[in-house]
Amino acid sequence: MPLSHTRALHTVTPEPQPSRTFESGRLTVQRLGSGDEAVLQEVFEKAGDYFLRITGHPAPEPDAAAREIGSCIATPGRDVALLSLHVEAGAEAEAEPVGVLGWWHGNPEPDVTLLGMLMLVPERRGRGLARDALAALEAWEAQRGVHRLRTAVAAGNYREHALLRALGFDEMPIRDHVALGLGGAHLALFEKPLG
Image (cartoon, rainbow, N blue to C red; front, side, top):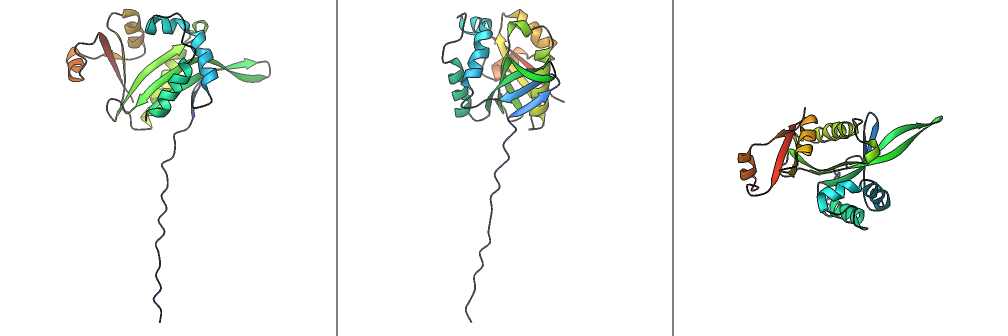
């Protein structure tokens, strides 16, 4: 009598990829990837004052969007997303690109997400869209096990310090800067608990 061998079939189910889009009231947050460089560059150019503060140049480099998306693709956990405002256009609703959100999930710790960019085009600022974008990111990251958002700005940029406080962030004590190896950096770290 021949022996029959049975093989146990093991199937590996890949972890589900997070959705490319998530919503918060008036905004759609769409994670970007290869092929999305043109729309990202367009928003970068409309918000040139952001680059003036960050790089000292009044406009982004011509390849800024391609470099940002490339960096996100190459770095696990990094994402950049287009913020689109839902607007009524007659009988139809349209989505108007109004900003960009960038973050790094699980950095510098597994339960922390580093907020690296929150940019709105000038004509849409002051209307609560930054708060809506941040709320969408917070809800999405909380579902992924994140308990805190963290960000850093120039130590002397008190205007952005006030904005971060208005968005619910608290400045981290200097001892935390030192513990993170940033004691000599001219940065102010801010953190916000989720939930």
